[in-house]
Length: 130
Image 1 (cartoon, rainbow, N blue to C red):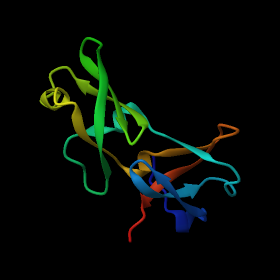
Image 2: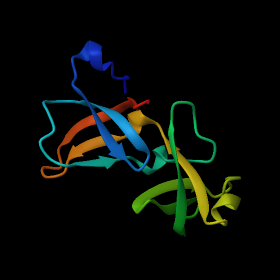
Image 3: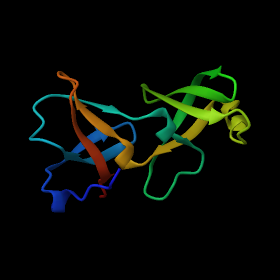
């Protein structure tokens, strides 16, 4: 996908609070009248060293599922469930055994939905700073 340029694309920006912190969201149509749901794909939740520009939190390993060539990790952070996938040969699997992991996401990987209609309304575009 192409990165959004909210100003150039004429999109409204809002700030939402997530388990990862405050994130700027570009609305894809109109305004937000309801609560929102923030979603992300498991492959976008990174375990280990955060990438530049990412949002990071500590997470607890609730349980793991061995699915052959990979491990599905079911995590939680501040009561929010998170899921990610690691390759079965990943060096990071040793960290899983400790029960605590540092995980991160890029703001643009966060997708925002209207909580009532379940319609996609926006996507993260940045981190709110200071």
